Length: 632
Image (cartoon, rainbow, N blue to C red; front, top):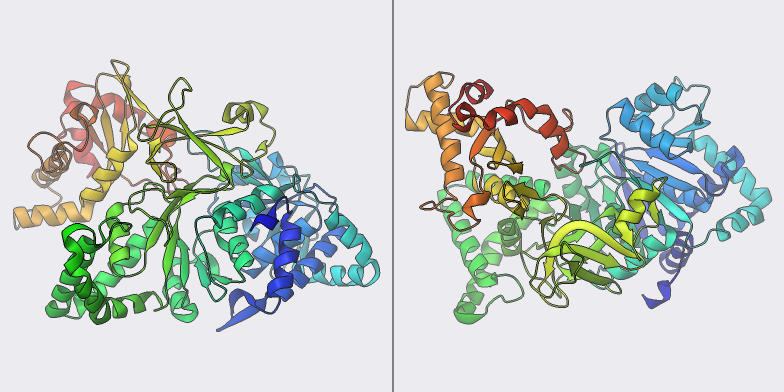
Protein backbone atom coordinates (compact mmCIF):
# COMPACT_ATOMS: atom_id res chain seq x y z
CA UNK A 1 0.00 0.00 0.00
CA UNK A 2 3.03 2.33 -0.05
CA UNK A 3 2.02 3.58 -3.51
CA UNK A 4 -1.19 5.09 -2.12
CA UNK A 5 0.81 8.15 -0.96
CA UNK A 6 -0.94 11.43 -1.65
CA UNK A 7 -3.62 9.96 -3.89
CA UNK A 8 -6.96 11.71 -4.17
CA UNK A 9 -10.08 9.58 -3.79
CA UNK A 10 -10.55 9.96 -7.56
CA UNK A 11 -7.06 8.63 -8.32
CA UNK A 12 -7.66 5.87 -5.77
CA UNK A 13 -10.89 4.82 -7.52
CA UNK A 14 -9.27 4.96 -10.96
CA UNK A 15 -6.43 2.76 -9.75
CA UNK A 16 -8.52 0.01 -8.16
CA UNK A 17 -11.27 0.00 -10.77
CA UNK A 18 -8.48 -0.56 -13.29
CA UNK A 19 -7.23 -3.49 -11.21
CA UNK A 20 -10.60 -5.10 -10.37
CA UNK A 21 -12.86 -3.84 -13.17
CA UNK A 22 -14.87 -7.06 -13.61
CA UNK A 23 -15.28 -7.79 -9.89
CA UNK A 24 -18.60 -7.15 -8.17
CA UNK A 25 -18.40 -4.05 -5.98
CA UNK A 26 -22.02 -3.33 -4.99
CA UNK A 27 -24.92 -5.58 -4.02
CA UNK A 28 -28.43 -4.15 -3.93
CA UNK A 29 -31.92 -5.57 -3.68
CA UNK A 30 -34.12 -4.34 -6.51
CA UNK A 31 -37.65 -5.65 -6.15
CA UNK A 32 -37.26 -9.27 -5.08
CA UNK A 33 -33.83 -9.79 -6.63
CA UNK A 34 -30.32 -8.98 -5.45
CA UNK A 35 -28.34 -7.27 -8.21
CA UNK A 36 -24.56 -7.00 -8.63
CA UNK A 37 -22.74 -3.92 -9.93
CA UNK A 38 -19.13 -4.23 -11.06
CA UNK A 39 -16.28 -1.87 -10.28
CA UNK A 40 -16.27 -0.67 -13.90
CA UNK A 41 -20.01 0.05 -13.92
CA UNK A 42 -19.72 1.90 -10.61
CA UNK A 43 -17.11 4.20 -12.13
CA UNK A 44 -19.10 4.72 -15.35
CA UNK A 45 -22.21 5.73 -13.40
CA UNK A 46 -20.12 8.04 -11.21
CA UNK A 47 -18.81 9.69 -14.41
CA UNK A 48 -22.38 10.18 -15.65
CA UNK A 49 -23.50 11.80 -12.40
CA UNK A 50 -20.35 13.93 -12.13
CA UNK A 51 -20.69 15.19 -15.69
CA UNK A 52 -24.41 15.83 -15.15
CA UNK A 53 -23.64 17.92 -12.08
CA UNK A 54 -21.22 19.99 -14.16
CA UNK A 55 -24.03 20.65 -16.65
CA UNK A 56 -26.31 21.58 -13.75
CA UNK A 57 -23.76 24.19 -12.68
CA UNK A 58 -21.78 22.61 -9.82
CA UNK A 59 -18.41 24.34 -9.55
CA UNK A 60 -15.26 22.94 -8.02
CA UNK A 61 -15.32 23.22 -4.22
CA UNK A 62 -19.09 23.72 -3.97
CA UNK A 63 -21.04 21.76 -1.38
CA UNK A 64 -23.78 19.16 -1.89
CA UNK A 65 -25.85 17.99 1.09
CA UNK A 66 -26.66 14.28 0.99
CA UNK A 67 -29.65 12.71 2.77
CA UNK A 68 -30.48 9.12 1.88
CA UNK A 69 -30.69 5.61 3.25
CA UNK A 70 -27.83 3.27 2.30
CA UNK A 71 -28.07 2.11 -1.32
CA UNK A 72 -25.94 1.92 -4.47
CA UNK A 73 -26.77 5.50 -5.42
CA UNK A 74 -25.34 6.66 -2.09
CA UNK A 75 -21.91 5.41 -3.13
CA UNK A 76 -22.17 6.29 -6.82
CA UNK A 77 -23.72 9.67 -6.01
CA UNK A 78 -20.91 10.62 -3.68
CA UNK A 79 -18.31 9.55 -6.21
CA UNK A 80 -20.11 11.66 -8.82
CA UNK A 81 -19.89 14.71 -6.55
CA UNK A 82 -16.16 14.11 -6.01
CA UNK A 83 -15.46 13.60 -9.73
CA UNK A 84 -17.17 16.93 -10.41
CA UNK A 85 -14.83 18.55 -7.88
CA UNK A 86 -17.59 19.04 -5.32
CA UNK A 87 -17.70 18.42 -1.57
CA UNK A 88 -20.19 15.96 -0.10
CA UNK A 89 -22.02 16.92 3.11
CA UNK A 90 -23.44 13.58 4.34
CA UNK A 91 -26.42 13.89 6.67
CA UNK A 92 -27.87 11.25 8.96
CA UNK A 93 -31.34 9.98 8.08
CA UNK A 94 -31.94 9.87 11.84
CA UNK A 95 -32.10 13.66 11.88
CA UNK A 96 -35.80 14.32 12.35
CA UNK A 97 -35.92 17.90 13.55
CA UNK A 98 -36.06 20.58 10.85
CA UNK A 99 -33.65 22.77 12.83
CA UNK A 100 -30.98 20.05 12.75
CA UNK A 101 -31.17 19.80 8.97
CA UNK A 102 -31.46 23.54 8.37
CA UNK A 103 -28.34 24.20 10.44
CA UNK A 104 -26.24 21.71 8.50
CA UNK A 105 -27.48 22.66 5.02
CA UNK A 106 -27.05 26.39 5.66
CA UNK A 107 -23.84 26.17 7.66
CA UNK A 108 -22.20 24.07 4.93
CA UNK A 109 -23.28 26.52 2.17
CA UNK A 110 -24.79 23.64 0.23
CA UNK A 111 -25.92 24.65 -3.23
CA UNK A 112 -27.50 21.31 -4.10
CA UNK A 113 -29.12 18.45 -2.18
CA UNK A 114 -29.14 14.74 -3.01
CA UNK A 115 -32.00 12.80 -1.43
CA UNK A 116 -34.29 9.80 -1.80
CA UNK A 117 -38.05 9.37 -1.88
CA UNK A 118 -38.08 8.26 1.75
CA UNK A 119 -36.34 11.48 2.85
CA UNK A 120 -37.74 14.03 0.40
CA UNK A 121 -40.42 15.30 2.79
CA UNK A 122 -37.73 16.45 5.24
CA UNK A 123 -35.94 18.38 2.50
CA UNK A 124 -39.11 19.96 1.17
CA UNK A 125 -40.00 21.13 4.68
CA UNK A 126 -36.73 23.04 5.15
CA UNK A 127 -36.18 24.51 1.68
CA UNK A 128 -38.00 27.80 2.46
CA UNK A 129 -35.31 28.39 5.11
CA UNK A 130 -32.48 27.44 2.72
CA UNK A 131 -32.69 29.88 -0.20
CA UNK A 132 -29.12 29.08 -1.27
CA UNK A 133 -30.20 25.60 -2.43
CA UNK A 134 -30.70 25.73 -6.19
CA UNK A 135 -31.68 22.16 -6.99
CA UNK A 136 -32.72 18.94 -5.25
CA UNK A 137 -31.57 15.75 -7.00
CA UNK A 138 -33.92 12.85 -6.19
CA UNK A 139 -32.85 9.21 -6.44
CA UNK A 140 -36.38 7.99 -7.18
CA UNK A 141 -38.89 8.98 -9.83
CA UNK A 142 -41.72 10.86 -8.08
CA UNK A 143 -45.19 11.54 -9.40
CA UNK A 144 -45.29 14.96 -7.74
CA UNK A 145 -41.83 16.26 -8.68
CA UNK A 146 -41.52 19.96 -7.79
CA UNK A 147 -40.02 22.66 -10.02
CA UNK A 148 -36.74 22.72 -8.09
CA UNK A 149 -36.39 18.93 -8.11
CA UNK A 150 -34.78 16.73 -10.73
CA UNK A 151 -34.60 12.94 -11.06
CA UNK A 152 -31.11 11.40 -10.88
CA UNK A 153 -31.82 9.58 -14.14
CA UNK A 154 -32.15 12.93 -15.90
CA UNK A 155 -28.85 14.06 -14.38
CA UNK A 156 -27.23 10.92 -15.80
CA UNK A 157 -28.70 11.59 -19.24
CA UNK A 158 -27.32 15.13 -19.10
CA UNK A 159 -23.99 13.57 -18.16
CA UNK A 160 -24.10 11.18 -21.12
CA UNK A 161 -24.62 14.06 -23.53
CA UNK A 162 -21.85 16.13 -21.92
CA UNK A 163 -19.36 13.24 -21.99
CA UNK A 164 -20.13 12.52 -25.64
CA UNK A 165 -19.03 16.03 -26.61
CA UNK A 166 -16.86 17.33 -23.74
CA UNK A 167 -15.18 14.37 -22.09
CA UNK A 168 -11.91 16.33 -22.05
CA UNK A 169 -13.52 19.01 -19.87
CA UNK A 170 -14.77 16.39 -17.45
CA UNK A 171 -11.31 14.81 -17.21
CA UNK A 172 -9.79 18.26 -16.76
CA UNK A 173 -12.19 18.93 -13.87
CA UNK A 174 -11.50 15.75 -11.92
CA UNK A 175 -7.76 15.94 -12.53
CA UNK A 176 -7.77 19.46 -11.06
CA UNK A 177 -8.75 18.00 -7.68
CA UNK A 178 -5.79 17.73 -5.32
CA UNK A 179 -5.15 15.55 -2.26
CA UNK A 180 -5.64 18.49 0.11
CA UNK A 181 -8.99 19.52 -1.39
CA UNK A 182 -12.04 18.84 0.76
CA UNK A 183 -14.00 15.64 0.11
CA UNK A 184 -16.50 15.77 2.99
CA UNK A 185 -17.90 18.02 5.66
CA UNK A 186 -18.96 15.47 8.25
CA UNK A 187 -21.02 16.98 11.05
CA UNK A 188 -20.62 15.84 14.65
CA UNK A 189 -23.74 14.57 16.35
CA UNK A 190 -23.56 17.22 19.06
CA UNK A 191 -23.22 15.02 22.15
CA UNK A 192 -21.72 17.83 24.22
CA UNK A 193 -22.22 20.96 22.09
CA UNK A 194 -23.65 22.27 18.82
CA UNK A 195 -22.65 20.26 15.73
CA UNK A 196 -19.29 21.05 14.17
CA UNK A 197 -18.48 20.42 10.51
CA UNK A 198 -15.42 18.18 10.28
CA UNK A 199 -13.40 18.94 7.15
CA UNK A 200 -12.02 15.74 5.64
CA UNK A 201 -9.75 15.92 2.62
CA UNK A 202 -9.19 13.45 -0.19
CA UNK A 203 -5.84 12.58 1.35
CA UNK A 204 -7.38 12.09 4.79
CA UNK A 205 -9.38 9.22 3.31
CA UNK A 206 -6.68 7.58 1.20
CA UNK A 207 -4.19 7.91 4.07
CA UNK A 208 -6.57 6.21 6.49
CA UNK A 209 -7.16 3.36 4.03
CA UNK A 210 -3.39 2.90 3.87
CA UNK A 211 -3.28 2.92 7.67
CA UNK A 212 -6.19 0.47 7.88
CA UNK A 213 -4.14 -2.01 5.83
CA UNK A 214 -1.62 -2.14 8.67
CA UNK A 215 -4.19 -3.71 11.01
CA UNK A 216 -7.03 -5.36 9.09
CA UNK A 217 -6.87 -7.28 5.84
CA UNK A 218 -9.58 -8.46 3.46
CA UNK A 219 -9.73 -10.97 0.62
CA UNK A 220 -10.84 -10.44 -2.94
CA UNK A 221 -13.78 -12.78 -2.39
CA UNK A 222 -14.96 -11.06 0.80
CA UNK A 223 -18.52 -9.75 0.93
CA UNK A 224 -19.19 -7.20 3.65
CA UNK A 225 -22.61 -6.31 5.01
CA UNK A 226 -22.57 -2.68 6.13
CA UNK A 227 -25.26 -2.14 8.74
CA UNK A 228 -23.94 1.28 9.78
CA UNK A 229 -25.30 4.43 8.10
CA UNK A 230 -23.19 5.44 5.10
CA UNK A 231 -23.06 9.07 6.22
CA UNK A 232 -20.33 8.24 8.74
CA UNK A 233 -16.70 8.13 7.59
CA UNK A 234 -16.27 4.78 9.40
CA UNK A 235 -18.49 3.19 6.75
CA UNK A 236 -16.42 4.92 4.07
CA UNK A 237 -12.98 3.84 5.25
CA UNK A 238 -13.58 0.53 7.07
CA UNK A 239 -16.26 -0.18 4.47
CA UNK A 240 -16.19 0.66 0.82
CA UNK A 241 -12.80 2.34 0.29
CA UNK A 242 -10.83 -0.36 2.12
CA UNK A 243 -12.88 -3.05 0.36
CA UNK A 244 -12.18 -1.38 -2.99
CA UNK A 245 -8.43 -1.60 -2.35
CA UNK A 246 -8.79 -5.39 -1.97
CA UNK A 247 -11.22 -5.98 -4.84
CA UNK A 248 -13.98 -6.99 -2.40
CA UNK A 249 -17.71 -6.18 -2.44
CA UNK A 250 -20.37 -5.01 -0.03
CA UNK A 251 -24.11 -4.73 0.50
CA UNK A 252 -26.31 -2.44 2.53
CA UNK A 253 -29.54 -3.36 4.29
CA UNK A 254 -32.59 -2.40 2.18
CA UNK A 255 -34.16 0.74 3.58
CA UNK A 256 -31.69 0.69 6.49
CA UNK A 257 -34.43 -1.25 8.30
CA UNK A 258 -33.54 -3.50 11.22
CA UNK A 259 -36.27 -5.94 10.21
CA UNK A 260 -34.51 -6.51 6.86
CA UNK A 261 -31.19 -7.57 8.44
CA UNK A 262 -31.98 -11.32 8.84
CA UNK A 263 -33.20 -11.70 5.23
CA UNK A 264 -30.20 -9.74 3.95
CA UNK A 265 -27.79 -11.97 5.85
CA UNK A 266 -29.53 -15.03 4.45
CA UNK A 267 -29.37 -13.72 0.87
CA UNK A 268 -25.87 -12.22 0.87
CA UNK A 269 -24.18 -14.65 3.28
CA UNK A 270 -21.56 -12.04 4.19
CA UNK A 271 -18.03 -12.92 5.22
CA UNK A 272 -17.55 -9.67 7.17
CA UNK A 273 -20.03 -7.43 8.95
CA UNK A 274 -19.59 -3.76 9.80
CA UNK A 275 -21.80 -3.24 12.82
CA UNK A 276 -22.22 -1.77 16.29
CA UNK A 277 -22.26 -3.49 19.71
CA UNK A 278 -26.01 -3.06 20.21
CA UNK A 279 -26.75 -5.13 17.10
CA UNK A 280 -24.19 -7.75 18.11
CA UNK A 281 -26.05 -8.11 21.40
CA UNK A 282 -29.29 -8.53 19.47
CA UNK A 283 -27.76 -11.26 17.26
CA UNK A 284 -26.54 -13.06 20.40
CA UNK A 285 -30.04 -13.05 21.89
CA UNK A 286 -31.47 -14.43 18.64
CA UNK A 287 -28.87 -17.20 18.53
CA UNK A 288 -29.49 -18.17 22.14
CA UNK A 289 -33.26 -18.17 21.66
CA UNK A 290 -32.79 -20.54 18.71
CA UNK A 291 -30.60 -22.83 20.81
CA UNK A 292 -33.11 -22.84 23.66
CA UNK A 293 -35.92 -23.75 21.27
CA UNK A 294 -34.07 -26.96 20.36
CA UNK A 295 -34.51 -28.35 23.84
CA UNK A 296 -32.62 -28.77 27.12
CA UNK A 297 -30.03 -31.25 25.81
CA UNK A 298 -28.90 -28.98 22.96
CA UNK A 299 -28.92 -25.98 25.28
CA UNK A 300 -26.76 -27.79 27.85
CA UNK A 301 -24.30 -28.94 25.18
CA UNK A 302 -24.15 -25.39 23.83
CA UNK A 303 -23.39 -23.97 27.29
CA UNK A 304 -20.66 -26.56 27.93
CA UNK A 305 -19.11 -25.81 24.53
CA UNK A 306 -19.26 -22.08 25.20
CA UNK A 307 -17.65 -22.33 28.62
CA UNK A 308 -14.89 -24.59 27.31
CA UNK A 309 -14.05 -22.26 24.41
CA UNK A 310 -14.05 -19.11 26.55
CA UNK A 311 -11.68 -20.66 29.10
CA UNK A 312 -9.39 -21.95 26.33
CA UNK A 313 -9.39 -18.69 24.29
CA UNK A 314 -8.57 -16.41 27.24
CA UNK A 315 -7.89 -12.97 25.66
CA UNK A 316 -7.36 -14.38 22.19
CA UNK A 317 -3.66 -13.74 21.73
CA UNK A 318 -2.85 -16.13 24.58
CA UNK A 319 -5.38 -18.89 23.87
CA UNK A 320 -4.34 -22.32 25.02
CA UNK A 321 -1.66 -20.93 27.29
CA UNK A 322 -0.91 -22.44 30.68
CA UNK A 323 -2.95 -25.40 31.84
CA UNK A 324 -5.79 -24.94 29.35
CA UNK A 325 -3.93 -26.54 26.40
CA UNK A 326 -5.78 -29.82 26.93
CA UNK A 327 -9.07 -28.14 26.00
CA UNK A 328 -8.03 -27.66 22.35
CA UNK A 329 -9.40 -31.00 21.01
CA UNK A 330 -12.71 -30.29 22.73
CA UNK A 331 -12.79 -26.79 21.22
CA UNK A 332 -12.48 -28.36 17.76
CA UNK A 333 -15.02 -31.06 18.50
CA UNK A 334 -17.62 -28.68 19.92
CA UNK A 335 -17.06 -26.33 17.00
CA UNK A 336 -18.12 -29.09 14.60
CA UNK A 337 -20.95 -30.36 16.79
CA UNK A 338 -22.38 -27.05 17.99
CA UNK A 339 -20.96 -23.80 16.69
CA UNK A 340 -20.92 -24.66 12.99
CA UNK A 341 -24.73 -24.74 13.00
CA UNK A 342 -24.85 -21.65 15.25
CA UNK A 343 -22.87 -19.71 12.61
CA UNK A 344 -25.51 -20.58 10.04
CA UNK A 345 -27.76 -18.02 11.76
CA UNK A 346 -25.33 -15.39 10.43
CA UNK A 347 -25.12 -16.81 6.93
CA UNK A 348 -22.58 -19.56 7.53
CA UNK A 349 -19.63 -17.71 5.94
CA UNK A 350 -18.97 -14.97 8.48
CA UNK A 351 -15.26 -14.62 9.27
CA UNK A 352 -15.39 -11.64 11.61
CA UNK A 353 -17.21 -8.50 12.68
CA UNK A 354 -15.69 -5.06 12.51
CA UNK A 355 -16.94 -2.93 15.41
CA UNK A 356 -16.24 0.67 16.30
CA UNK A 357 -17.27 0.74 19.95
CA UNK A 358 -14.19 1.60 21.99
CA UNK A 359 -15.83 0.36 25.21
CA UNK A 360 -17.23 -2.85 23.75
CA UNK A 361 -18.17 -5.34 26.45
CA UNK A 362 -15.40 -7.93 26.74
CA UNK A 363 -17.92 -10.68 27.51
CA UNK A 364 -19.53 -10.03 24.13
CA UNK A 365 -16.12 -10.29 22.48
CA UNK A 366 -15.45 -13.57 24.29
CA UNK A 367 -18.81 -14.92 23.16
CA UNK A 368 -18.29 -14.26 19.46
CA UNK A 369 -14.68 -15.44 19.63
CA UNK A 370 -15.93 -18.68 21.17
CA UNK A 371 -18.49 -19.39 18.44
CA UNK A 372 -15.90 -18.74 15.75
CA UNK A 373 -16.81 -15.24 14.55
CA UNK A 374 -14.44 -12.82 16.29
CA UNK A 375 -15.78 -9.33 16.89
CA UNK A 376 -12.72 -7.17 16.43
CA UNK A 377 -13.02 -4.00 18.41
CA UNK A 378 -11.49 -0.82 17.10
CA UNK A 379 -11.29 2.83 18.03
CA UNK A 380 -11.50 6.06 16.14
CA UNK A 381 -13.35 9.30 15.64
CA UNK A 382 -14.47 11.35 12.66
CA UNK A 383 -11.73 13.92 13.20
CA UNK A 384 -9.25 11.09 12.50
CA UNK A 385 -11.15 9.92 9.37
CA UNK A 386 -11.75 7.78 11.62
CA UNK A 387 -9.58 4.68 12.29
CA UNK A 388 -6.94 5.01 15.02
CA UNK A 389 -6.61 1.41 16.17
CA UNK A 390 -8.14 -2.01 15.60
CA UNK A 391 -7.83 -5.65 16.55
CA UNK A 392 -7.35 -8.23 13.80
CA UNK A 393 -6.66 -11.94 13.30
CA UNK A 394 -2.92 -11.36 13.39
CA UNK A 395 -2.83 -8.97 16.35
CA UNK A 396 -5.58 -8.93 18.96
CA UNK A 397 -6.17 -8.75 22.67
CA UNK A 398 -9.80 -9.06 23.73
CA UNK A 399 -10.67 -6.06 25.88
CA UNK A 400 -8.19 -3.79 24.14
CA UNK A 401 -8.98 -1.19 21.48
CA UNK A 402 -6.46 -2.84 19.21
CA UNK A 403 -3.20 -2.14 17.45
CA UNK A 404 -2.48 1.48 16.57
CA UNK A 405 -2.48 2.00 12.80
CA UNK A 406 0.71 2.85 10.92
CA UNK A 407 2.08 5.23 9.86
CA UNK A 408 0.70 7.44 12.66
CA UNK A 409 2.12 8.94 15.85
CA UNK A 410 0.33 8.57 19.18
CA UNK A 411 0.97 9.88 22.67
CA UNK A 412 -0.88 9.96 25.98
CA UNK A 413 -0.90 13.29 27.84
CA UNK A 414 -1.84 14.24 31.40
CA UNK A 415 -3.82 17.34 32.45
CA UNK A 416 -0.71 19.49 32.10
CA UNK A 417 0.21 18.24 28.64
CA UNK A 418 3.02 16.00 29.89
CA UNK A 419 3.57 12.80 27.94
CA UNK A 420 2.90 9.65 29.95
CA UNK A 421 4.48 6.21 29.79
CA UNK A 422 3.01 2.77 29.12
CA UNK A 423 0.11 1.88 31.40
CA UNK A 424 -0.54 5.47 32.48
CA UNK A 425 -3.94 6.96 31.67
CA UNK A 426 -4.38 10.30 30.00
CA UNK A 427 -5.74 11.99 26.87
CA UNK A 428 -5.16 10.18 23.58
CA UNK A 429 -3.47 12.43 21.00
CA UNK A 430 -2.54 11.42 17.47
CA UNK A 431 -0.67 12.90 14.53
CA UNK A 432 -0.80 11.73 10.94
CA UNK A 433 -2.24 12.31 7.49
CA UNK A 434 -5.62 11.08 8.72
CA UNK A 435 -6.06 14.13 11.01
CA UNK A 436 -8.85 16.39 9.74
CA UNK A 437 -8.17 19.72 8.03
CA UNK A 438 -10.20 21.45 10.75
CA UNK A 439 -13.76 22.46 11.59
CA UNK A 440 -15.68 24.34 8.92
CA UNK A 441 -16.11 28.02 9.86
CA UNK A 442 -14.86 27.33 13.38
CA UNK A 443 -11.21 28.36 13.75
CA UNK A 444 -11.49 28.55 17.55
CA UNK A 445 -12.51 24.90 17.96
CA UNK A 446 -9.96 23.88 15.33
CA UNK A 447 -7.14 25.61 17.23
CA UNK A 448 -8.26 23.98 20.49
CA UNK A 449 -8.51 20.50 18.98
CA UNK A 450 -5.51 20.33 16.63
CA UNK A 451 -2.37 21.73 18.25
CA UNK A 452 0.87 21.67 16.26
CA UNK A 453 -0.60 18.93 14.10
CA UNK A 454 -1.64 16.80 17.08
CA UNK A 455 -5.31 15.87 17.30
CA UNK A 456 -6.50 15.98 20.92
CA UNK A 457 -9.24 13.35 20.89
CA UNK A 458 -10.82 14.15 24.24
CA UNK A 459 -10.76 10.41 24.99
CA UNK A 460 -8.93 8.81 27.90
CA UNK A 461 -6.75 5.78 27.39
CA UNK A 462 -3.34 4.20 27.81
CA UNK A 463 -0.82 2.28 25.76
CA UNK A 464 -0.10 -1.27 26.96
CA UNK A 465 3.09 -1.23 24.91
CA UNK A 466 4.17 0.36 21.64
CA UNK A 467 1.32 -1.32 19.74
CA UNK A 468 -1.81 -1.84 21.82
CA UNK A 469 -4.18 0.95 22.90
CA UNK A 470 -6.84 0.76 25.60
CA UNK A 471 -9.62 3.37 25.58
CA UNK A 472 -11.26 3.74 28.98
CA UNK A 473 -13.60 6.72 28.75
CA UNK A 474 -13.84 10.40 28.01
CA UNK A 475 -10.91 12.56 29.11
CA UNK A 476 -13.02 15.71 28.82
CA UNK A 477 -16.14 14.09 30.29
CA UNK A 478 -14.85 13.92 33.84
CA UNK A 479 -16.86 14.21 37.01
CA UNK A 480 -15.48 16.44 39.75
CA UNK A 481 -16.15 15.67 43.40
CA UNK A 482 -16.51 18.32 46.11
CA UNK A 483 -12.82 17.97 47.02
CA UNK A 484 -11.73 18.51 43.41
CA UNK A 485 -10.98 14.88 42.53
CA UNK A 486 -11.70 14.12 38.86
CA UNK A 487 -12.90 10.75 37.61
CA UNK A 488 -14.40 9.28 34.45
CA UNK A 489 -17.96 7.95 34.81
CA UNK A 490 -18.11 5.85 31.67
CA UNK A 491 -16.57 2.60 32.88
CA UNK A 492 -18.82 2.66 35.96
CA UNK A 493 -21.88 3.31 33.80
CA UNK A 494 -20.84 0.61 31.35
CA UNK A 495 -20.30 -1.96 34.09
CA UNK A 496 -23.58 -1.28 35.89
CA UNK A 497 -25.53 -1.30 32.63
CA UNK A 498 -23.99 -4.59 31.54
CA UNK A 499 -24.20 -6.37 34.90
CA UNK A 500 -27.74 -5.45 35.87
CA UNK A 501 -30.79 -6.64 34.01
CA UNK A 502 -32.89 -4.23 36.07
CA UNK A 503 -31.09 -1.08 34.87
CA UNK A 504 -31.52 -0.31 31.19
CA UNK A 505 -29.31 2.80 31.16
CA UNK A 506 -27.46 4.97 33.66
CA UNK A 507 -25.45 8.18 33.68
CA UNK A 508 -23.62 9.63 36.66
CA UNK A 509 -23.36 13.30 37.63
CA UNK A 510 -21.10 15.24 39.94
CA UNK A 511 -19.99 18.82 39.38
CA UNK A 512 -18.22 19.57 42.68
CA UNK A 513 -21.35 18.51 44.52
CA UNK A 514 -21.58 16.80 47.95
CA UNK A 515 -21.92 13.38 46.31
CA UNK A 516 -22.40 11.64 42.98
CA UNK A 517 -25.94 10.95 41.78
CA UNK A 518 -27.25 8.63 39.07
CA UNK A 519 -29.94 9.10 36.45
CA UNK A 520 -31.33 5.59 35.97
CA UNK A 521 -33.57 4.27 33.24
CA UNK A 522 -35.22 1.21 34.84
CA UNK A 523 -35.98 -2.02 32.98
CA UNK A 524 -39.60 -2.06 34.03
CA UNK A 525 -40.55 -5.48 32.66
CA UNK A 526 -37.70 -7.22 34.46
CA UNK A 527 -38.47 -5.34 37.68
CA UNK A 528 -42.11 -6.40 37.51
CA UNK A 529 -41.07 -10.01 36.96
CA UNK A 530 -38.73 -9.76 39.94
CA UNK A 531 -41.50 -8.45 42.19
CA UNK A 532 -43.95 -11.14 41.06
CA UNK A 533 -41.37 -13.84 41.78
CA UNK A 534 -40.46 -12.34 45.15
CA UNK A 535 -44.07 -11.78 46.20
CA UNK A 536 -46.54 -13.82 44.11
CA UNK A 537 -49.97 -12.29 43.64
CA UNK A 538 -48.87 -8.71 44.37
CA UNK A 539 -50.32 -5.89 42.24
CA UNK A 540 -47.24 -4.69 40.32
CA UNK A 541 -48.76 -1.21 40.11
CA UNK A 542 -49.12 -0.90 43.87
CA UNK A 543 -46.92 1.36 45.95
CA UNK A 544 -45.56 -1.67 47.81
CA UNK A 545 -44.49 -3.31 44.55
CA UNK A 546 -42.81 -0.15 43.33
CA UNK A 547 -40.97 0.21 46.63
CA UNK A 548 -39.61 -3.32 46.18
CA UNK A 549 -38.52 -2.40 42.63
CA UNK A 550 -36.67 0.68 43.89
CA UNK A 551 -34.95 -1.32 46.60
CA UNK A 552 -33.83 -3.80 43.95
CA UNK A 553 -32.30 -0.99 41.88
CA UNK A 554 -30.51 0.23 45.01
CA UNK A 555 -29.23 -3.31 45.65
CA UNK A 556 -27.80 -3.44 42.12
CA UNK A 557 -25.77 -0.29 42.80
CA UNK A 558 -24.82 -1.51 46.28
CA UNK A 559 -23.30 -4.66 44.77
CA UNK A 560 -20.29 -2.45 43.99
CA UNK A 561 -19.89 -1.56 47.68
CA UNK A 562 -18.18 -3.55 50.42
CA UNK A 563 -19.78 -6.95 50.80
CA UNK A 564 -21.28 -6.85 47.30
CA UNK A 565 -20.49 -9.20 44.42
CA UNK A 566 -18.83 -6.43 42.41
CA UNK A 567 -16.95 -4.84 45.30
CA UNK A 568 -13.56 -3.43 44.39
CA UNK A 569 -14.36 -2.71 40.75
CA UNK A 570 -14.38 1.04 41.45
CA UNK A 571 -13.59 3.31 44.41
CA UNK A 572 -16.72 3.54 46.56
CA UNK A 573 -16.42 7.31 46.73
CA UNK A 574 -17.19 7.43 43.00
CA UNK A 575 -20.42 5.44 43.29
CA UNK A 576 -23.77 7.26 43.32
CA UNK A 577 -25.17 8.10 46.75
CA UNK A 578 -28.57 9.04 45.35
CA UNK A 579 -30.60 7.70 42.43
CA UNK A 580 -33.10 9.47 40.19
CA UNK A 581 -35.29 6.84 38.54
CA UNK A 582 -36.50 8.27 35.23
CA UNK A 583 -39.98 7.92 33.71
CA UNK A 584 -38.79 7.32 30.12
CA UNK A 585 -35.71 5.93 28.34
CA UNK A 586 -33.04 7.94 26.56
CA UNK A 587 -34.05 8.01 22.88
CA UNK A 588 -33.31 9.91 19.71
CA UNK A 589 -36.90 11.13 19.74
CA UNK A 590 -36.50 12.94 23.07
CA UNK A 591 -33.00 14.08 22.01
CA UNK A 592 -31.33 12.39 24.98
CA UNK A 593 -29.55 9.99 22.63
CA UNK A 594 -27.77 10.87 19.40
CA UNK A 595 -27.65 8.98 16.09
CA UNK A 596 -24.58 7.05 17.28
CA UNK A 597 -26.65 5.72 20.20
CA UNK A 598 -24.68 7.72 22.75
CA UNK A 599 -26.45 9.51 25.59
CA UNK A 600 -26.39 13.28 25.16
CA UNK A 601 -25.51 14.18 28.74
CA UNK A 602 -26.17 17.90 28.51
CA UNK A 603 -29.72 17.27 27.25
CA UNK A 604 -30.52 14.62 29.87
CA UNK A 605 -29.12 16.80 32.64
CA UNK A 606 -31.08 19.79 31.38
CA UNK A 607 -34.37 17.87 31.15
CA UNK A 608 -33.94 16.38 34.63
CA UNK A 609 -32.37 19.40 36.34
CA UNK A 610 -35.20 19.52 38.92
CA UNK A 611 -34.88 15.80 39.67
CA UNK A 612 -31.13 16.18 40.13
CA UNK A 613 -31.60 19.09 42.50
CA UNK A 614 -34.12 17.00 44.48
CA UNK A 615 -31.53 14.20 44.74
CA UNK A 616 -29.36 16.55 46.79
CA UNK A 617 -32.10 16.95 49.43
CA UNK A 618 -32.62 14.57 52.41
CA UNK A 619 -35.88 13.22 50.93
CA UNK A 620 -34.40 12.82 47.46
CA UNK A 621 -31.35 10.97 48.71
CA UNK A 622 -33.52 8.02 49.74
CA UNK A 623 -34.32 5.87 46.73
CA UNK A 624 -37.87 5.25 47.94
CA UNK A 625 -39.23 8.72 47.36
CA UNK A 626 -42.36 10.08 45.72
CA UNK A 627 -40.69 11.11 42.47
CA UNK A 628 -39.07 7.70 41.97
CA UNK A 629 -42.36 5.96 42.81
CA UNK A 630 -44.12 8.12 40.20
CA UNK A 631 -41.51 7.22 37.54
CA UNK A 632 -42.38 3.53 37.84
